[in-house]
Length: 477
Image 1 (cartoon, rainbow, N blue to C red):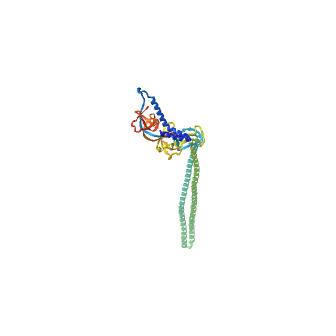
Image 2: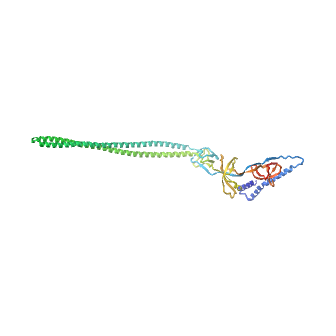
Image 3: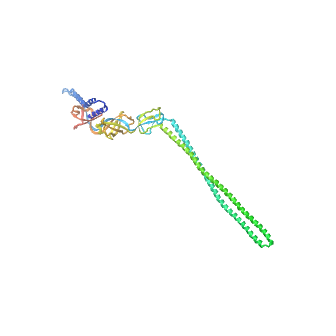
């Protein structure tokens, strides 16, 4: 009981720091005297009842009593204090788009999960922009696919022309080689004919001279005429062979020239075909690059429109609690306007105790947190200040809920019960304890008083210590 009043005094000093000492001292003295005043009143009342009940010995007096067995059990040692609910991270979510609020799904104090939709903006124009961007992308993609196919076909055609030109040129070159072989053969034949004619002419001349010399003079004129005709014929044959050789040269040269011209044309066509491939590739690639740029722009427009549409869907930034709501359905808002405030799931409770309990507070200690709604929740001490506040003489500490309540209000004050330990105790109801000038006592079965010491009082029950008394039965008058 003494510690109870001492804690009351400590709280009084903490909460009324501005009261002058002259006022505080009498209050403190009065509080310290309360147990003795109470004992005196109880003792006086018992004396009055005793005197009033005295009657002649012959009359029988019946005194109604109530007895109780003292309960022996383990009792939690509890330190009571108050605390405040806070969060280690708080965020205000602002709108990225202007518009009208069409849906709000949560309210202040509600718990949400990361990514959960909490509100919506009406963004029909953004949806229309997204549809237009998607249509533009589809059309541009079709154009790109078609142009790519055209490019491949143009290049293929140019390459086929190159192959044709190469084949034609190759055929002409083979024909040129064949013509050269034919030219050699025909010229060789013509030369043989020419040589035969020339040899024949020389033979006629030789025979004519021999026969002329062998003939009588009167016959030499005829012989000379005869062989002149044969020589003339041989010379004609020789001239013909020579003309045939010249004609062959002319024909062969003409064929060679024609073939060479065709080869030149084929080579020119080949070069043009090769240049056509290069030109087709350059033009097609240029067109494809231009369409690809349009396609990339269309894709960027889709991404931008998608972001605008997504920004119309307001989502929770992380798991946590909505601490404040600034919007209502139908409200028109601007870009950057605050929508809701959030606190993450790192909810903490800050509390403190008087310095006399400082050594009973430690990390991992279990506490009970009683909300203003009357609900009780289990928490655990996670951090204890390394020093006592020099002004308030109180030790600060932090706690975390083992399971978060469904609804929380940041800044809410709560009652805290720190379970500092468990010990054996005798528990009796408050009304079985009496006081006199010697202190608290209980009545035994034989109506004898037994002095006791009070350890702690909780919820109308008192934890007491007996001093060597074996009985555990007491009564009240």
